[in-house]
Amino acid sequence: MTHRSDTKVTALQVAKHAGVSRSAVSRYFTLGASVSAKTAAQVAKAAEELGYRPNILARSLITGRSRIIGLLVAYLDNYFYPEVLERLSRELQAKGYHVLIFMAPNNAQNVDQVISEILDYQVDGLIFASVSLSSELTIRCKALGVPVVLFNRLQDVEGISSVTSDNFRGGALAAEFLVNSHHNRIAYIGGTEGTSTQRDREAGFRAGLKSAGKELFARAIGDYCRETSRLVTREMFDRASDARPDAVFVANDHMAIAVMDVLRYELGLTVPKDVSVVGYDDIPPASWASYDLTTIRQPADQMAAETVAILLEQINEASAQPRQVRAEAEIVVRSSARLPEASIESEEESLSEKLKKGKC
Image 1 (cartoon, helix red, strand yellow):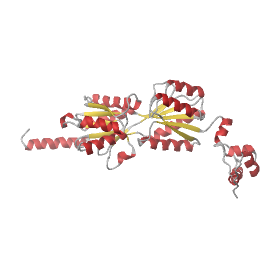
Image 2 (cartoon, helix red, strand yellow; image 1 turned 90 degrees about the vertical axis):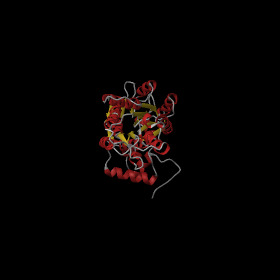
Image 3 (cartoon, one colour; image 1 turned 120 degrees about the vertical axis):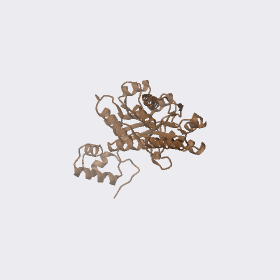
Image 4 (cartoon, one colour; image 1 turned 45 degrees about the horizontal axis):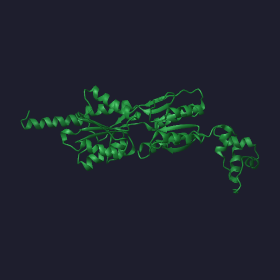
């Protein structure tokens, strides 16, 4: 029969009830510690009967480990991040860690304040999802022995580990695809200026265009925001057909979906006949029939696994060195952008029509 009391049950009481030592109870509730099957069964039964749960925070004062990871994320309205949080949480829980999630405010000063609060929880490590880290906080985390890994961001600060997709290569893939589809007026709608993802995706895209002898036709910043991307899409495409882009690479799917909505439902343009759209991330809605978005896929599973592996390595090994991982990006071809073959067929049909009319 399970016993319940208003008085907090202690590990010593569990030990006496189970007929084992206090240290045996401690080992049973410590992940990875050695305990015999018989002892484990006795402790489990006694704990259940007494209603005992171990105090993880109190134990951290003894072991010096809280087994808590602080995770700071900038926003959750982009589908990419809820998925990533789930993957990171599952990876960490499988290793016996708990996740404490904080939302990042909009400015660097407040970010520093939130991180200071996270450190007060005696976390064993920190993961920053699309959040930058100041050099002052880098120094403080190092002094406290708290490892940090940046997820989906690079930082121009030495000694910080990071995990991203190969954003430069991803941008180049988008350019190559659109050039091979025989587009001539190719535009770009970027993310937040100053972020590494925006910088590298645009740089790769421009490099891909340049290698094909083309230049960017138009550029706007969507700030990784749906409403801002809607606004800049109206400004970029609400003009005569020969003055607007015939293709656009958008720095993430979250914005690309908003771009497609404006093109089709506000401006009356057809995707991809009038405008081809390519995004970045491959979030779940990208594969929905209503969007069927061609995009550059970030390998989220691999990136989450790499992030956790690097963080735990640095937690468990004082000599572990920071690492920068760039996971391979790949293009996922759907129907929001013309295919190279379709473009060639379209040109042939156009030439055929001209011949019929005696214009060639």
